[in-house]
Length: 435
Image (cartoon, rainbow, N blue to C red):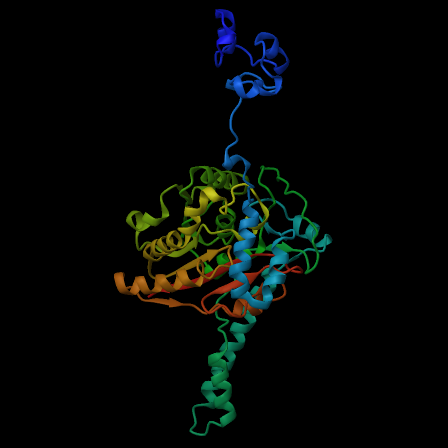
């Protein structure tokens, strides 16, 4: 390198001093230097390269293949739900990956008497009213049968057939729970994937219906709100179930809570778009951590809805944005069952003795559904000396079998399965009674 000599040449070869040299110029500046050896002997000399400061080494994290969260979700679902659902999983999986069906929840606060007729012209029908009528007929039939049974059984001679009939009646799912006739939700028939037109405002600016997964109404119907009930919606945002609770017209007071401030803003938007001011005044919207609700208003409410955060299976299988199967949210996903258990316990403690709690998710996972409920029953008894009765909701399968596809293997609560001809859900719900 002594052959380089001279101050100017040394400056040219100094690392980082000026632009990289073109290989063709180096032999002219350095006599006797073989052109092929120029890049090796002159640091920073790369054919066609710019300044060294503009180059960087590729990181493995940047070059490694990125697995989208939807694929991670499907992989998890395939390994878990194929064991849980067995032969049903392929059809459920196909439905999850197809377009979801919606229902149009009519807004009774809007001046929209023409809307039912317009929806009927589209071949949509209200699925709640027929179920309400079936429940009323079943109640009347049960009352008549009980009266006849008392009369016939008053003598000593009850036949074996009569005893069998009584036993059958005692074992059959109870149809005593009434279904609110004030809630009206229109859906298209099985196999019909027609989309509803956008909702329109009335003269006062209130929208005429709210589009939602029709299966998400089942937890609200199971809660069976009665006149002047104090109701708590512990995880209320974005507001579909809160709006459905108000449609019953029975809430003496409704507390709508959600820990997320941004989602609470969406809840406010729904209330302002669908509910008049005088009704909104009966609703208190808060952003407390639902796990601590018993410290705010414990043992207060007649009815509590606990619609917990979950893996939102359909969203996780279809959408990249805000997907809980993203790698950076792994810990959050793993902690979901614990969070759900804490929220359900807070809901139980918020209910007064004799009050009802409905727990719900939009997941197929037994770990987030039945296991959470079972563990909550154990904790309520062991740590708080609270006895809980799990109410039988099997009659929902009969009342809504024309609209939804139910799982028949659910031991605690009810589970709506997505199906290609009835692509609602998944929705799990279980009703608890605090004794």
